[in-house]
Image 1: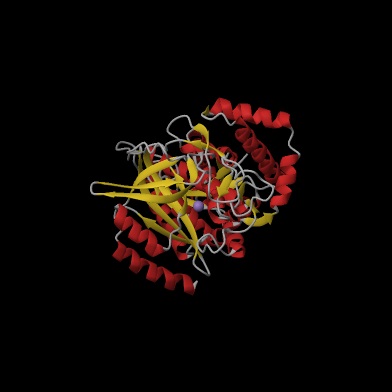
Image 2: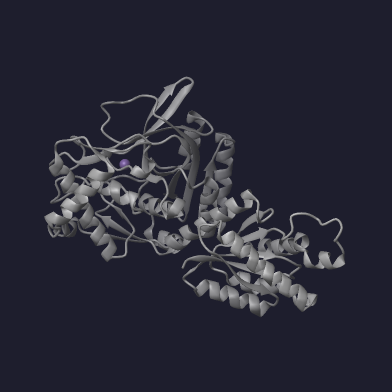
Length: 486
Ligand code: MN
C-alpha cells in the first residue's frame, strides 16, 4: 500500500527511557495523522546514527510503496549523521518542524523536559543540513494537530503521489503534433529524464483495428453508462455509440501498454468517423490524461494533476484559452476546447449533444458533453520546453458561473477571472511563454505544483495576485541565467 514514511531524529546521549518515549510518541503521532491524511503515515524509526539513517533512506529509495519521507527531530539530532543518508534520498522529502506538546507546561517544566522536547533547536540543526546539501524539501512548521499542518501534510502526500505517478507514467500518442505548432512540441528525452514520462506513438490504423474488434454488446454497455451519467440531448444515438466504441478501443490499447495518458490530432483520423469527444471526456473523468493536437505534455500533466487531486482523481481537466470578455469591470477568459473538456469540473449534469465540427477529418458529427464549469478558486498549469529545460507556469484564477448562456456554443465552457487581472495576467503569461493548452484544476494548488516542480527539478513560475509584468520579466531573466548554470 502506497504510504509516506515518518523518520524521527534523535541521538544516543539521552538514555534508554527518553528514546523509548520518543519512539512511542513517533508511533502515536503517525497513527493519529494517518487517520487524517490521504495516505498512511508510517512511523519507521527513531534515528540515532549515520548508518541507521542511511539504511532507512536506502530502504525508502528502493521500496515502491514508499512515496516520500517526512523527518522531524523530537530531540537534538546532530546533522552530520544525516548527511550521507539525505544525500542519497531519491524520494520527496518533507521536514516537519513540530513538537509533541502544544504548551510549555508551567508546573512540570524542568531540565528533563527540556532534554526530551528539544525540537525547537533540533529542527534548526536539521534544517541547516537540508540547506547545506541544497536538497529539495518541503518545510512545514507548526503543532502537529493543527488544521494548517494537517492540510499541508496532506498536500505533501498528494504531491508525493504525483511524483510517484509521474515517474511511472507512459503516454500513448496517436500521430504527431498538429502541423507547425510550436508550443506543444518538446524534448521527450528531457521529459523522461526529469519527469519520468515515456512518450511513444502508436498508429491510428491500430486504433481503428481495435475499434473494429469491439463487440456491439460492449458498445451497448458503455452507451448505457453514458446515458445514466449524462442527459442525452440528441437523436443521433449512433454517434454516441460510435464514441463508446472509440473509448473502449483507446482504453484497451492504453491498458494493454500500461499507458495512463494519450494524445491525438484532428489531422489524422484515418478510418475514423469522428474525433473522439465523449470518448476522451469520459476517459479523463476516469483519471486518464488527455492532450489534443498531439500535446503530450499537457496530456501527461492532466494525468499527474488528476492523481494529485482529491481521491486520486480530482476536479481537473485539459483546457484551452479561447476568447476574452474585455468589458470594463467584467473581464473574463472563456476556456473550452473543440470537444474535450473533462466532466469532473462540471457544475451540473452534462448533456450529450452532436454538432458539426468543421475542423479536422470528421466524416460525421461528433458526440460530445456540453456543460458549464463550476465556480471556485482554481489554477491553470502550462508546461513549456525552453530548450535545455522544462518551465512550468501556474496562474491563480477564479472561476465563475459563465455570465452569459452562449446558446450556440456547442462545447463545454469555463469562465474565469485571472490574477492579478486579465490584462496583466495575460502580459505575464505571454512573457513567460505559457501555452494556450493548460490543465485547469480546482483541487490542486499552486503551492503543490511548486513543490512538484521542485522535486522534479524543473523551473517554476507562479503568476498570482502580487505578480507584476515588470517583476516577472526580471525574474525570468535571472531564471534563465540560473538554469544555464545548472
Ligand atoms: Mn487545442
